[in-house]
Length: 278
Image (tube, rainbow, N blue to C red; front, top):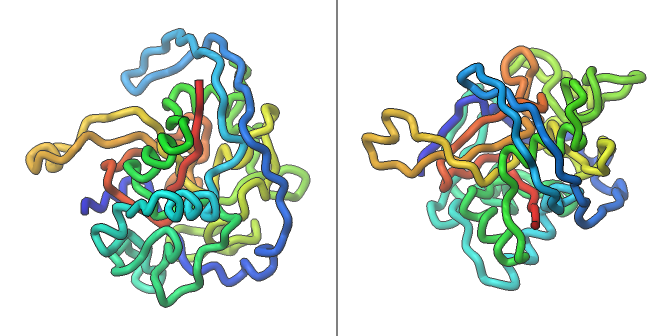
């Protein structure tokens, strides 16, 4: 299994989840995102006009419960389960490691608490997310669709899906890293790892977690690194949205324009997904 860190940075046992794991969060199904014309700046510095067609988008991230229902219905085996290990951040050593038996039900290993069912599923590869989407007769969003939805289907200039500031009215608007990564997380937003989907509210379109909590797989391909190409590694897949591990001074991935990528078999403890549909 290829472990690709890049901007994808860390997580650990969430000792504060007891405060919120029983909190009831209402979940919507899919939201219609109206189409429109988006001005998009690309990595080469050019800005182009892109037309995005209307589509349906999951209001919330796919939860552990929803993914587990899929596994039980289909006997699906995830990439992490096939490999027998997955990527977990070691907070004591402050580095990533491959941990045996880490999977979507035990994202930090079998010796840690089992994943909360109403939290976003993690330790799922792009392949796993794609399989779930097909089972639902849906698909993964394109990067442009994801960004258009994060912009609230508008060309209004704003930094985050909710506005301009991470903290508004004394409240955090997303689940991110506070403090100095990876040395210290003050957990001012109430979470060290994942939070219940929808906990931090919704954007103008009614979509939750369009910034922070977990990175989200998209359908787009990007070229492998030079080392990966030498090893005949498949093209990477894009992820959007940042995660609870993103320190704005290190990984500002929860910006609307933020993005990262990993190879399609890679599973990480802070990466999940949501589905789209024409």
